[in-house]
Length: 334
Image (tube, rainbow, N blue to C red; front, side):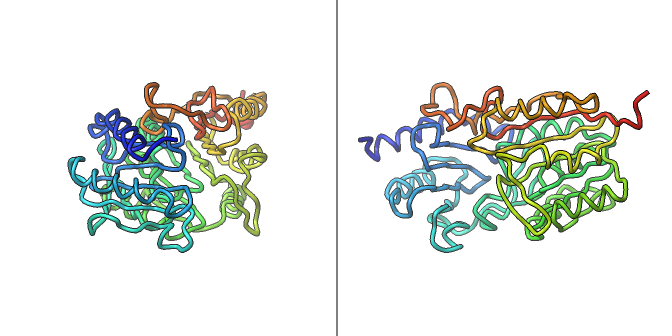
């Protein structure tokens, strides 16, 4: 049986491999226990705050979590607080996070010279997804002059990246208005033109249906849905029903525009997802362009990875599978 000291040493070793990320961003993963030898424990850094996600039974890992928290406050430069999120907690406070060290949490982070507002205790997540960092970089580089629609926007980091990439217009839509308030804060702290930003609180199926009726077109549409959800207007199921979701927004993409798809279904293999995309791309009006890899701080490194995900993500490098498609409109074809 692995002792707590051995686990602690493996955590320290994994953290050592991530030091250079501080040059790119103030938010990055320090330890991914699901792949690096301690299933259930994930540790991220968000500015001055260390966030520990405990996916195990409450209390089982308390000793090592407290040990990591004390060590981080002493050994990690700039860390002033440690937040614990108990994913199987019995009440919202435990799930959203409780401070076990320090008194204040980080309010924003910077990544590729872009600022993103945070509310680390807003919900069970940390209000920004680290696995889509490379996609934010892509949007910074490819959004010039485009109208961008960000569906299932969450706290809007992808839309803000597009705005910082000089998109002509960014529409962010999500069912949860509290998430979208963070999106607005991120837009504001970057001093972006308020006239290029629109926030829509609403159901994906209703919002996109209205836009189809209005014959709206966008140079880039982003679809980053949750793994599973149901509303009165429709169902999201990334394991079994991706094509239907895609076909809801495909008519909103302008000729030669981008359709960005993110599928984080843990038990859906990369091969199965690619087969579905290739089936859709048999049409002359849709082509597969490229994969956006998940950064190595999230995936782990060859010398730190000890376990594999439950479904092989290849040709993607992580269960968060990010693909970019190109759309061609029939009414524009000659």
